[in-house]
Amino acid sequence: MSRRIVVITAGLSQPSSTRLLADRIADAVTSQVSARGEAAQVEVIELRELAQDLATTMTTAGMPTPAVARARDAVSAADGVIAVTPVFTASYSGLFKMFLDVLDPDSMTGMPVIIAATAGTARHSLVLDHALRPVFTYLRAIVVPTGVFAATEDFGGGESDQLGRRVARAATELANLVVSESGSVAGFAPHATPQRRSGTAVHPEITDFESMLADLGQ
Image (cartoon, rainbow, N blue to C red):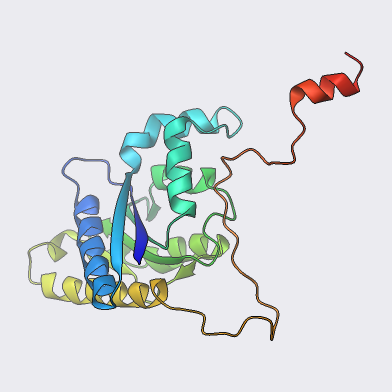
């Protein structure tokens, strides 16, 4: 069975340390999922490439562009998400928040998520718990216990081994959730199955415009 992992990365430069960290976590998750006898299919959403589409979506009453609709569908259909943002003004980037704002509120219900962030200094490491974890909790996602923060010195410096251990631990926690089964017997107790939607599909029971005009005698 193949599991779908979506990577949301909000790095603005190219090359980007945020993308570098996202790729490192994705590789670790792929290895951990494979170690459990499953395959992992990784799809990366580069928010830098969606910047204009996100602005258009937000200024047209939430009507998604085709690119934003594809990204929303990918997130809601994923088995797990890796979300990585650079730190701006002691929080996640504005581009990262714009993407979360255009998601359907039910798109990540019950979804395992790794939160990660990059910054120039380790003084911003608390951004994981005071900004990222609350926003994904609001979306009813399941955030793994280990968040991954990487300052500049973590890439290739003396702290690189510690970063590798954090990445491996977070990847293990996500893989355990992605491949886990409920183990419950159906019918013995009420079971709330997470319902996810991207918000891009037309509701099947919606009345089309022609029928509405006919009802008005026009």
